[in-house]
Length: 497
Image (cartoon, rainbow, N blue to C red; front, side):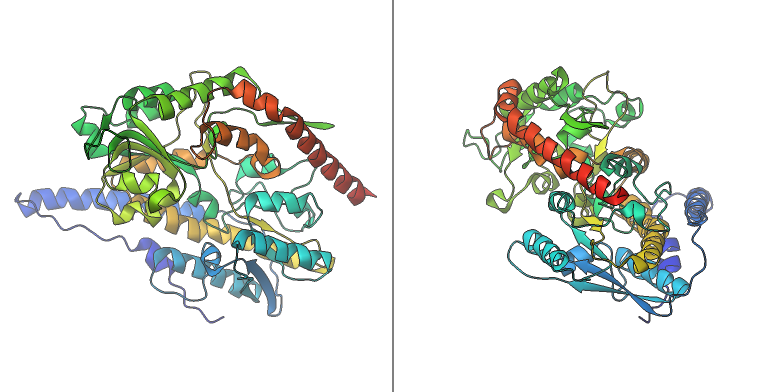
């Protein structure tokens, strides 16, 4: 690959805003220049600090060896791979991160697409599984769907990432909670790192409309968030009675105005509210979800979504609309969404929005928790052991460069400087990144999350009766957890024999 290094220019190219004030140039402009210089200096210092973190990888020359990435579609690949620069800040950051790694280790990084059509997640996962079952060396690293990856992992399809040389999971480019959460019996099969922007993209947050809050004489929630007092009850009390029948048809529909809009299916609720889903013991896996806090969460959310005037929850794809689209059309005060919604959609609207974390369930919950999902990086079991050092080195290097180059482009420049409108959102995004959490249960026993989806999704039969729902599925959930435990136990025993 022949590539030109553009990232430094992209990272430091912050456009100045010309003053339109009638104030004398020697007063307002001077103050603005001083403030901008201070901001630029702070941003440069933060970038330099990030770049200065060593990955501690030894020097190596791999003599042009090809490192093979495997993705389902071009759209998926764009989250971690770019063939050429095109002027887009994020694309060029990915491009230059790859270039840096190639030049440093004399390797050629390529991306192969399965692109099999149909349900792309299923067909891609099946392609990986069939190749491994046929003992084919299909690739060095594949990206794959989260829960499908979990199912394949316990079938023995992947290499334990802890066996690869050069991976250092203590480094900041590995999401620390994900490493801890997804490790069991010293085995980690699913990687979530800064090599890709997908995980940060899919981090759940709350968006709020600054102008509309002002119209309703409500305070922006930043001070409440920073004080650690942003609770679910606070959100409910602000939104449950905010409703306007804009089309006058006496029916709540997509043309009306709401206090809060959410979307189905229901993901990441249990994790966000600090409710334990699975208790991992040395000799067992048991569910931790059957408790009073889960019941409290379900009752509060059901009351908001189905028994108040001020909230609406939309089915995925309903009438080609979704919760964030309606929020972007100034039709709600608050909306539940993902950070990526700001990049992919909200930046193209005129809505004056802010970003805050999902609230705490109550005062007992000590910290905000930003739950996220990811498309994991997996290493097929058929990877020859003599490639372990090479593959581990390149994964670690790409993850480190993602942290140094891709993440700043996405987070520092794109989200903070281009797609959001206030300094408080910048601080909150720092807070959110520091408390991101990924759940073992969502990957290896999706039925636990399915309990909440079944109770709160409009696609199911909405109800606040968690106890009944849990009782109906307790036996099957315990059976699945037992199977997951046995699979990890067998893989552990096979590894130490």
